[in-house]
Length: 336
Ligand code: MEV
Image 1 (cartoon, protein in one colour):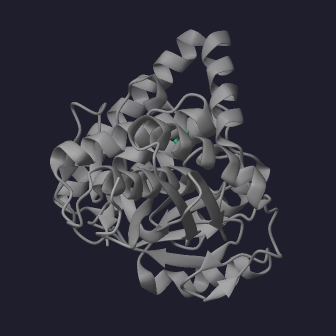
Image 2 (cartoon, protein in one colour):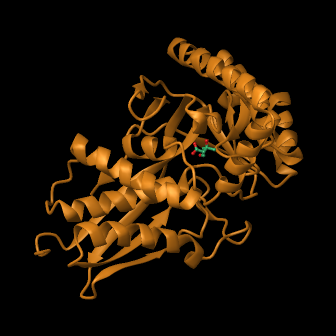
């Protein structure tokens, strides 16, 4: 393949927060999810040796808001552990579609790993975007809808490899961006979005999504009747959530978030530390607070009027925690 047309290929894709519906979405329930203004970035250079090499600084937990590198303060995974599945993922694609080239990809991320913000999905989408750009042999930065669909499907294969069973919600929103009502890839639509005052609190406790998804699968197996009742409640919360978002009623959205959290607590993905933080959020005047993503630690998503945030930050300072504001990102995967 003649690769002289383009010495480098770059791409980036956003992380996500799940506003309603995590875990239940694995069983074909709906979810409401937003791409966020924290991204994974990748750049590929062509090299002489055939195949793929990946280098990264993924293990570092960089907070662009505080410009603080928190790698030393959290339980970080080694680069090798993080990069092995991503390298296999790229090798599989390149082996099938362009075995005659060699590339070295460097990835870095504003998304801490294992905190519920869709870091692995954003990495897979970024890498699939880079590979698609190389395979299609065009220097255009436009991504056709067919290519975007291909990238979503390939990224989902990668996610399945990392997390075993994945609903596809993280890869979907990372590929397409925006605020999304996810009801399976064919019945999913973008919701007209207005700015929501969303904040994240990183518990600095990393989780393993696949373990939490397995835990919920066992709960469902052992208590199927109760699980189905909770699924119905989760569906009702999503439906009310869509109406509340359309109305712009922050109070209703917040109450529904806290209701959603109670379901997550019942299926066993919360813990005493998370409950303590959520209790503080509610007492400090937040409109709503919940786990976002797999739970077990990770991030807490808070909806709050900005004027209440100083009180919240003062209350969680003693736990060595701090909230950070996030915004919904309308752009999903970008090729640059
Ligand atoms: C992880 O971000 C969300 C889960 O619902 C798993 C999934 O949807 O694949 C816990």
